[in-house]
Image (tube, rainbow, N blue to C red):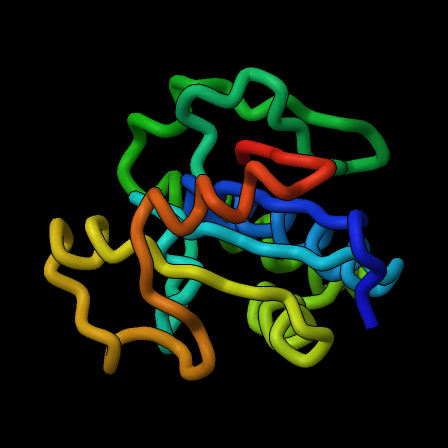
Length: 162
């Protein structure tokens, strides 16, 4: 399926609902364009490989977060994140928007990546650090360290850090 010399790797470091989309969309799109794609999940990005996902979104540190509301785009101030229940509210708003717009879920995108042959590697050091077990993670992924990722990345045409 993949063409020699056409390849991409992505280091996935964030595991929130909003940050889960970019690597999975890019990976599935690239793989559908016949690129050989590797995703290396490390630190908080490992959350995207868990069997049971409970992903959240927060306004904290995200000055650019705007949500379409009442016919306009309303900014979500950082201060909102300090209020009790705010992360639940922003998560519910994002999930509602995703559903209304017919955007695929993280689970669906992850499954599509697996089905199309995207190589998914869980960082073994991070697995050990956070005391995750393979039984916590979805089936069909690899477990390896930074050396495996670097070996792959040195052969890729495109390398991204998300």
